[in-house]
Length: 276
Image: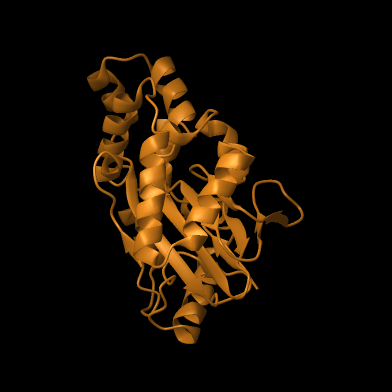
């Protein structure tokens, strides 16, 4: 189950969610997307392989990751139980003790974020809750208490919203001129708050919207997909596809079709992919 939080978190968070049950696959691959994530784990540890990691890393209390720039692998335990937050690109920064760029493709544990004592207390309160709805209320209240002011947040939110509204097609230079801020300041605040530059965020939006719009059940004209998304040529599109997903377009369609065939109407269908 999931729900949108109330003010003031609704301007930072897309949804709070509760997840319980058996994962569709033991290993899932998550393509890069403009979506920072926080998970508080209430079950057995899960495993993550991200960035330049060659081996899986175990996360027992949960994980926090800012806007990723490449695909990462995630292994849920069976069964799994957790609560989490899907943030807007700028939404995680008010809860971080470090610049967002430090967590880009380098997930942290919740304990590294908020400390051992506070993390253990939050875990115990969530585990003792009677219902998923109560868990999400507890998590929302905890996040409200942790809010802190961030320099440049309004600027980054306005520019990021404009990038999102155009699917990454808006010229970044135009946004900078409209903001009356120097390109150096804008890039610095984006890396501190989102984790990546405005240009990289725009690339992420453009790619994500393009891929999610693909109907994998129908024949696909990849040249047409690339052209409609604004790529100069198909080779550039394929290169970006591999960068964001770790897969070729053809292989991506194969694994998406496998997910649809194996788990029709699954809650996770759409973005996570089988990695096994």
